[in-house]
Length: 556
Ligand code: GLC
Image 1 (cartoon, rainbow, N blue to C red):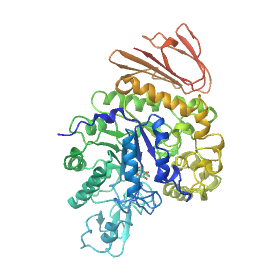
Image 2 (image 1 turned 30 degrees about the horizontal axis):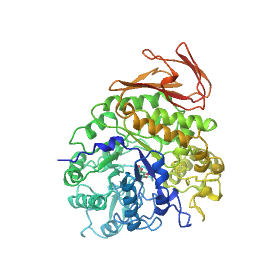
Image 3 (image 1 turned 90 degrees about the vertical axis):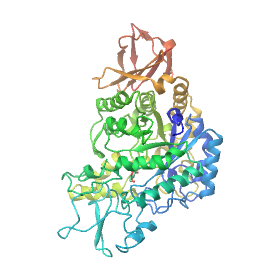
Image 4 (image 1 turned 45 degrees about the horizontal axis):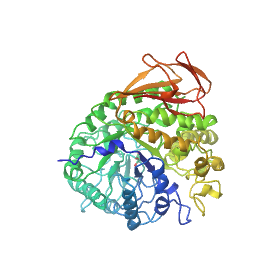
C-alpha cells in the first residue's frame, strides 16, 4: 500500500536555481550555504517546500540539466554533508525538499556515456540510443529541441546517438532494463537520505517510438511526436512507482511539455497514479507559439482558457501544479503584466494564479517582482537555447541587434539573473564577481526594500499564502469562470463546503468599472485580499477597478 502522501496538496513550493540564489563564499556562484542562510526567509513567505533545480556535478552544457554524477553535489554549491544538513534543517522547520530528477538524458561527460561511446560491446554500450546512419546521414530527420538535428555521429562506433536537447545531453535508452534499475537506484539514494520527492524533468520523453520513423517536417517540432508520450512510458513509470515510490512517503511532480488536461487526468488520477501532479505548459503559451522565442501579443483569453481547462477537467480526479514562473521562462510581469505597473501587475498575477485549486510553486525572485533583464550585447548571454536561436536567426538573415531585442524579451535567461537581496554592490548576491549579470534595477527592486514596505509584492505574497492556507476553498474549491470572453478581466469563483470566493483581476492599464457577476453581492466586509493600499467604494454592486487591480471576496 502506498503511504498517504496527500500532504502534497497543502504545500507551497519555492523553487531554487542555486547558481543565482545566494553566494556565501564569494566565488560569484550561488551555493548551498547561501540557501541555508535563507531558509527562514523562504519559510517566512509561507512556503513549506523547496524544489532544487539540479545541484549535481555537471559540465553545464545546460546549466545543471546535464548531469555527470547523480549521487553527488556540484563543487560550486557544496557537498553531500551540507546538503544533508539542509534537508535536516528544512525538516526541523516542517518544510519538504524535492530534487530534480533528470533521467531522460545524462551529460556526455557522465561515465556511462564515456564508456558507451567507446564500442558496441562494453557494459554501457546499450545505455544510450545508438543507431546506424542512413544514406550517408543520420538515422531519421528528428530535430533536437535545443541544437539542430537530434543525432550526433561518433566515429568509434560508426553510429549516431540521439539527443532531444543539447549535444552534450545524450538520451538514455530507457528500454534497457539496466538503465531503469539505475534510475531506481538514484531515486532510492536521495529518498533514503530524506528528500521528500522529485520534480521529474521532461519525464514524458523517456520512451521513444521503437521504429524511429521520420517526423512531420516542421521546424522546432520535427520528431517530438515520436519521442513524447511513447509506447512504453506508462510501463516504465509504473515500474518506478511500484519498485520505489510506493515504499516512501514522497511525492512526484512531472514536467510534461506538450500534454493537456486529459493527459493529466490519465497520469495523476487515483491511487495507482504515476505522478501526483504535472507541470502544465498551456497557460505559459499565452504570448507565444510553441516556444517562448516565437513571441505573440499576450492573450488573456488564451491564458484563462488553459487554466480553466485544467481546473475543470482535473476537479475531483487529479491535482494541479500552479505556477507562472520558473527557470525556463522570462519573468512573468514582463510577459503577462506590465513593467510600468510592476507592483500592481505583480500582485494581480499572483492573485489570479494562486487562488485556484492546486499546489502553488513560486520561483526565486518572483516574490519580489523581479523583471526581465535588458542586456546590451548578445555576448553577455550564457544559455545554449539563446546560442542556438542566434544561429537560426542568423541563417535567415536577421541582424544581430534585432535578435538581441528578441532575446531580451523571450530568453529564459531573464529568469536566471542573481536574486536581488539588497541595494549594495551586486544586489547583495555575492561579494565576488557574479557568474551572470545582476539586473541593473537592483537598487529599486530587492528583498530588503520590499521587506520594509507593507504594500510590496513580497508582503502581498505572504498575505496571499496565509489567506490561502487558512481557507481551504482556495486549495480544494470548485472553479467557475465569469466573463470568459473578456480580454481585460479574469474573474472566477471557487466554492467548497459552503465557502465561496470571488477572484477578480484586471489586466488593463486603464481604470474600468467592474460589475459583480450574478449571485454575488459585493461587500467590502468580505474582502480578504486587495492589491492597492486603499479600497474603492462599491456602488450598485459595481466597483471601479484601477490598473491591474485584484480583489478577492470570501463568503463563509
Ligand atoms: C527541462 C528543464 C530545462 C532543461 C530541459 C532539458 O525542460 O526545465 O531547463 O533545459 O529540461 O533537461
